[in-house]
Each structure stands twice: as C-alpha cells, then as structure tokens.
Amino acid sequence: MRSYNLITLVCIGAGLLLAFSAGAQTTNTPATIIENLEQQTGTVIVKGFSVVGSVAIGNATITVRNKVSRDIGHGRITYAIAVGFSGSSTDGGSPPDSLIPKKTLVIDGDELDSLVNSMDYIEKITYDVTPLTGFEASYATRSGLRFIAHSDRRQGGIQMFIQFGDTSRIQLNSTQLTLLRNVITQAKAALDVIK
Image (cartoon, rainbow, N blue to C red):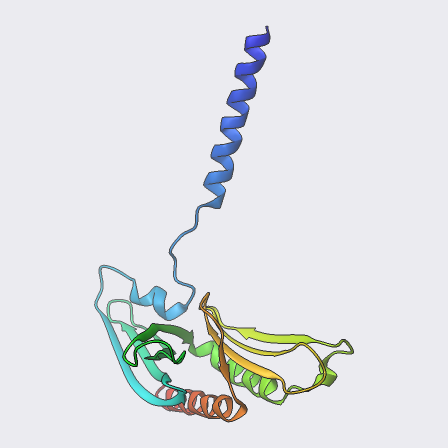
C-alpha cells in the first residue's frame, strides 16, 4: 500500500511538472501587426521603407524610418515606423570603433498618435504628478519601445530615457527627446499622406 501511494505521488508530481512547463512555453509570434503580415507565407510580400530622420545621442544615433508592407495575394497593406539605435561606445574606456548593439523596434501606425502624445506628456512632466518624493512615468509600445521620465527626489532634474525592449535605458536630454518626437511626428504625417 505504501509503494502504491509513493507511485501515485510521483505520477501526480510528474503531471504537474508537465502542466507547468507546457504553460510556460512562449511563442515567437511578433507583437506588431506589420511584423505578422511580413511573416506570411504562400504570398508575395512587398516591403517599402524610407529614412525620415535621425537624432544624435552622444556617439550613437537613433534613426526613424517609415515602413509600408503589402500582402499582394490578399490585398492587405500595413503602415508602421521603425526606430533604430546604433553607434559607437560612449563609455570612454572602449576602442572608438566598438559598437553598441544595434536594436530596431517597429511601431504600428495605429500606435503613433498615442506614442506622440505620450512623448509630449513625458517631455513636460513635473513633480506635481505625484505627492510622493520620487516617481517614474513610462509609455511602452507593443514591440517594447519605452519612453521613461524618472526622478528619485523633488530636487534636481527629471531624467528622461528611451529603452529598446530589455536593453539598458539610454538617457535623453529634453532637446533630444523633443527632436525625436518631432521626427516621429514627421514620420506619422508622411504615412498619413500615403494612406
């Protein structure tokens, strides 16, 4: 009887482990509409792109491109922007030609109004946003592009950052954030013209 109970417990434990591991599996389904369209098979996909502008961040550059992808077989068209980061190391201890990892994230056209409005809010945020000493305000797109305002205390400046998914935050000054918002606004306006 005792060995029967032990076998039963082992079987239940194995079943639970399988259930938890099956639930923890993730898929590689893209988060954006345009990336899903571009992964279609059995049809011709035409991808159009053009550079709208860029903003210098130290020895690095953030570039904004417009994207239009068309599924010829099904007559579907999607619009987006791609925000990319690339450049040289800025830590001073690395060779000048060492590269910061390149990263590009796509933002669907239907997210652009919200993105621009959120960047404007983050750019103008003040300590009045909360009665507490510190705060963090952030906005994230489906693909994981994140804009952040952060302050630990009510003295000094509010720090602003851009973050590409799980990478380290990249600090922006207010001029850089304004320039980047302007380039994204230009990209949106250019897409609106061709829709």
